[in-house]
Length: 312
Image: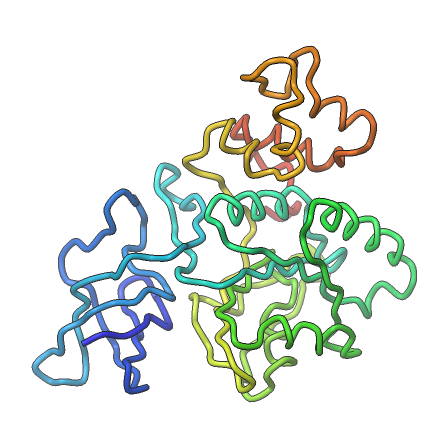
């Protein structure tokens, strides 16, 4: 039998079969895709084959079909392995906020580099527009301009006022979308606003730490009333890059990649070499200094906590 994984809890999986029924499945023995060292052998979005157990109410996953794409990050407790967030997706939406909590730009950049590397189109959704009250409007525009100028689509939304919700619904319609973001940015609330019938559990941001609590414990796929599927994921408080050389990283910053041929040296690392077109573009303001800082941090494999909230 065949189906798609709609929820992963680490050892148990919910699989929606071709006839629309949902079955609880386990993995027996070692089941891994060739070339991928991951802490989770099966992820949400995987197309799998399974055998029914004798009770015909549960199943055993026996095969994972090849993935068209997937999004990964460095596993939290096993730094040399990956954690597959989701597979077989049409796009990913990264939900960010300027306050309560503030999403660090380096976190955004690390996520976008990974999306580029795995060929997943990414859109930035700046949430909680209602909290800015004109004070941060200019900051929001400047932030969105950084990413618009690179070529990323950016939208600003509010679950409270309804701003941007119609546009968000259009983006989601008839697509399989991974929704991700820093803890507390309001991902589940946004989903409830877009599709109220799902009624996902939501939480509040701590006023003491300005960080969110995990209200989504495991990745889960939901069907949208207006067409399409959305994969809600636990809030992330760090995004480790894995299996990328400095050259790979430079290729996944579009504004750096477009200038590689203009550098004096073919193997330029864009750190200290003379005649570097990338450094010249940073100096002239053509490349945002925040993006260059993120590039340097990633190639130095520096995830020491610079972009994490104080509570972590």
